[in-house]
Image (cartoon, rainbow, N blue to C red; front, side, top):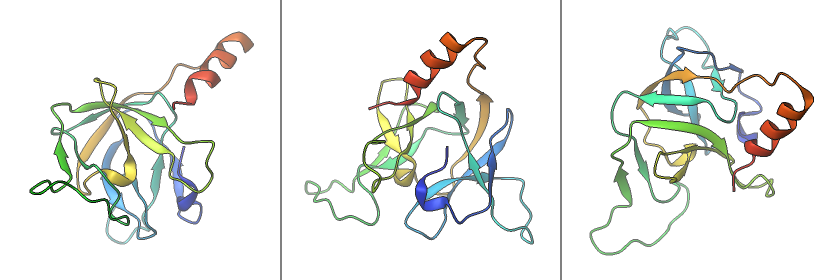
Length: 149
């Protein structure tokens, strides 16, 4: 729901129609906060459940590599990508490695982008939360879907 690096940041669960902004939290991580926060409020991370659908207000922009890592790019390649997609599904990847970021989005073409690679300042709206399981079998099936990767 929220990466390990946001453990010391005030947070809450995302809700349908939440207005989000991609934010750098100053700890080597990027995530979502509410667009509706006022300057006098402490920044609150919005934590999303896997399979939450998000609509960005413009095509999604991200880098091919993390801002805290140097990854050589080919000449003229800044590593910046402007996707043709503006809708994504929240997921978690690399969950078997406790020292990596896990929070990501999956684009309609299957591309997975860590939230730490999203360009800060982008705005989005929570469209749909994952279905609530009606029985233990559905809960088990949903738990299997939560791990991507």
